Length: 181
Image 1 (cartoon, rainbow, N blue to C red):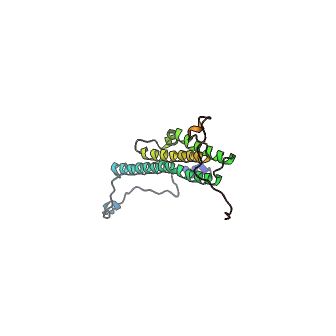
Image 2 (image 1 turned 135 degrees about the horizontal axis):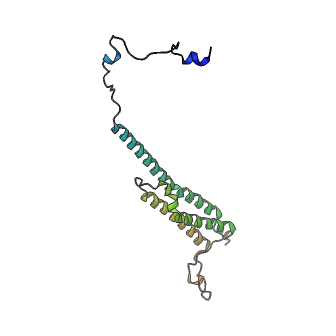
């Protein structure tokens, strides 16, 4: 006996006939429960669900854009702490930290378009995140310039530009030890 003939034969052993040929009332005659509809779902439901999905995706993009916009704040705090740890004397470490504090905001300000490119969409508002990003990076740049000034590396007096002028008088003096009278 061939295996194929037993399965493919006309008289299958485990065949079920789903056609309704009885005369008794069928399930079609029973009323549907309240709130149940056999009609296919309307297109409006799929359109509203699509709108909800689009709105949720836009909201997520907006949130990610705000995360990127606020990311320089972490860098600003870390750089401020590193500058404080470097001290106010001119040495290699403090100059390197100060250069880094100036370089990072400048490079971030040059690449604002690239940074916010993944969030570019007509439905996502990027003006405020970009402004926050710019403001925080300008704050980081101001912090670096302030550090340059505290190190005395900014030319702030006329004597810094002209060698024949005397340097300005020191306003404060500090010293340690005991004063004996």
